[in-house]
Length: 98
Image 1 (cartoon, rainbow, N blue to C red):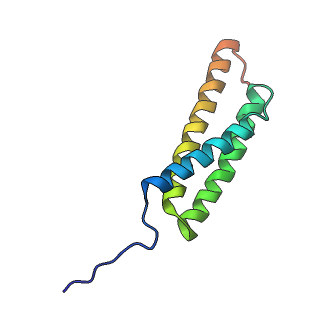
Image 2: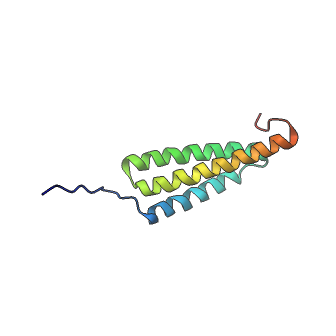
Image 3: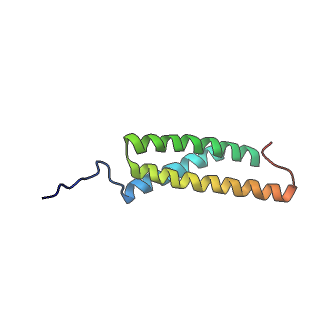
């Protein structure tokens, strides 16, 4: 008989959904702190960095499904912030983050 190995914390859809909703709320709350495009972009980068640190800790010591949801939504939030910065840059011709 061959041994069967099981993961202690298997990735589940519910875990990914919880991580996604949590990261969405986290990024939304920090994004609302910005009063203009540069403020929004910097707050989103800061919140995303903290979220990815939390995801790294969860991957190592906790639920990897939640970490996956956090990482996916954070990447999406950073993409939205980058698109907004790029649109402002294209409209004004001036780099908005400095």
